[in-house]
Length: 77
Image (cartoon, rainbow, N blue to C red; front, side, top):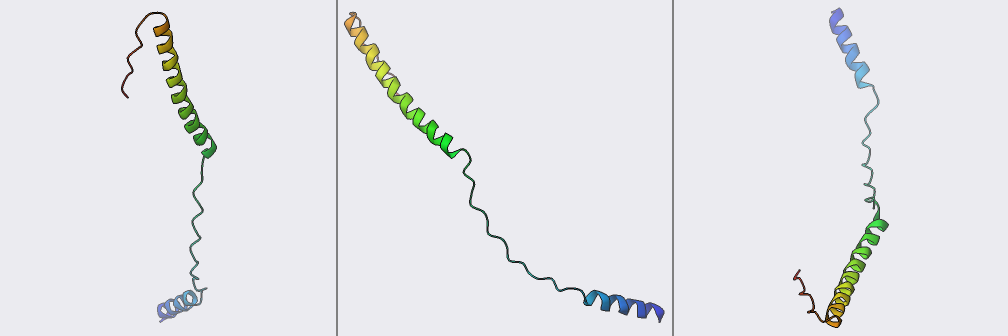
């Protein structure tokens, strides 16, 4: 009898606790753009590098022709 009373008391105490409130899920933060400025600068540098390389190849061809040689063959990329 005593065990039944203790068991019922525990059930009543547990049932009287606070009800769990469902919390709405927080919205996901926007993705972080790490080093976006550096990436843009790198792309610009790659474009400039291509232009500089083309100008250097053209200048090399002009020098070769002026010194009596043949222009260099262009590598296919």
